[in-house]
Length: 111
Length: 116
Image (cartoon, rainbow over all chains, first blue to last red; front, side):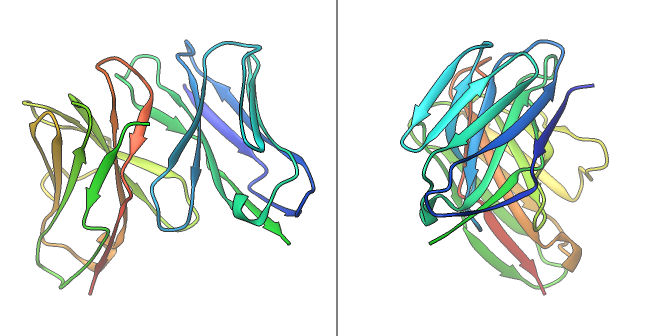
């Protein structure tokens, strides 16, 4: 069964304190792993797509990496505006694009 | 990225009435759209897959007669919550893929439904 698990559930950082969020996945055939950012009361905002182990993508203070079993979202020197819930998802192998989401990591960055 | 517009962003309705939520792909055609429900502090729960020109596919446990989905064009899918009750109060979100078979999804802004 396709499954995505994120850790930690919540993460509190001081401004400038770098850290990483984890996304572990089990899927029959990986067709991409997606990271989204969700602010309260908003829909998820697309951040990254990773397709193969070893791939890395960066956007401002965020860098996403992928291995055969998990993905990391590294946050370097975070700012309060990075506070949000970060979701990762993988498409189900045989269900026409249906995304399997992790529970999300709620990140809070204090000034 | 591609733009998906959802309307309304907030709606309050009386118990027993119906509410329609629209999801539009603004700069691309979407043969498939997805409808999610999200409870506070929880992740997205897929409700149904909306297919243009055909019947929607509902996830197990989702009432087809309560959550009516229509996907009449390549840029518009609607979700109608019929005979709404307070327990239907939730955050509803739609998503669409930019190409058939492409797995990258873009999401609408979400609709906060409150049934009083």
